[in-house]
Structures are given as C-alpha cells and as structure tokens.
Length: 218
Image (cartoon, rainbow, N blue to C red; front, side, top):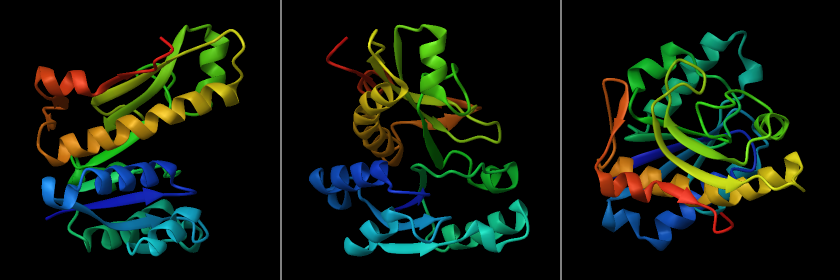
C-alpha cells in the first residue's frame, strides 16, 4: 500500500477532491494507495477537521512556534517521514519549501499552481493574467523543486478568459478544473505512469493526453 501525505494551510478543497476521487475510484485496491495523513502549518485549518471526520490522521505543525524556517522544516520533515510517503501533495500549502526539505524527497512532491506555467509564477496570478490580456488561463500540476514554481510540469488545466472576468470569477472557474486534474496527476504518479527523470516529467502519450484538461467553454 502506497502512502499519500497531503499538506494544507486552509480549507483543503484540493485535498477533498483527491479524497473523493480516491474513494470513487477505489484507490486502496486499484492502485493500491491511501491518504495516510493530512498536515497543516495552521492548527485551525478547516481541512484538518475534514481529515479527522474522515478517519485520516490530522496533524498541525504550527510554523509560528518555530524561530526560523529551517527549524520548522526539520519538524515538518520528521512528521511527514513518519508516514513513509510515496507521494507528498501540496494542496494550498502556503509555505515555501527550501532545498533542504525538497531535495531528499524530490520526485515525490507535487504542487498545483493557479496559472499555466511557466507564465505567472508566484502570487496574484489571476490579476496578472487579466492585466496581461491573455485569452486562456488555468492551473499547472508540477513536481516541486527548490525553484519557486519551477519544477517539471506534469499536467495542465485550461479555462477561457472572458471579457467579463474578474480575478474572483477567473479563480472560481479555474478551481473547478483543479479538482479534476489534481487527482488524475496524483494517481498517474502513484501508478508510475509519470516519473521525474533528469529534471523532466516523463510519461507516455496516452498519459500526457489524459493530463491535459480543457474547460468545455473552450
């Protein structure tokens, strides 16, 4: 049985989407894999309540209790590694992870970024997309590297940018597809259909097609 550890900072809507897909598709028998733990840097994160309600280990590693990033990451790493994770999923985890945390776990950590990388790395992606006048926007699932939003791209979900869009409406449209693509990518990585090789995400054509998701409005 492969273990998944999910890191969150808030509600954890992508955690909920992955949990729902894992149960609908019976990952425990089909992959096999399970969500072993949900960990948050914020003790009051609503996603921890969801995990407890669903019988999943829910743990807070409060970053405000540590004097610096290094000591926080050391404790986070200890808690994460306790579950021997085959996959670590960042699902709205609002802390930048340094090379010291990432390097030993490279190829096993995923993140979803609300933009079509390599465009709009960092924050305020929806505002910046509207300011730039792009006609499509979306989300990218990638392997995590020490470079911010710079890891190998695995899959992307694409939505149209409409003339009436605000940052909030664009974000809402994109989030719906995040909930589709993130579980797909997680399962593909767990099933070894996607691997990180020499800094690139390697997969076959069929997998690549399945990890390109487009809004039906396009």
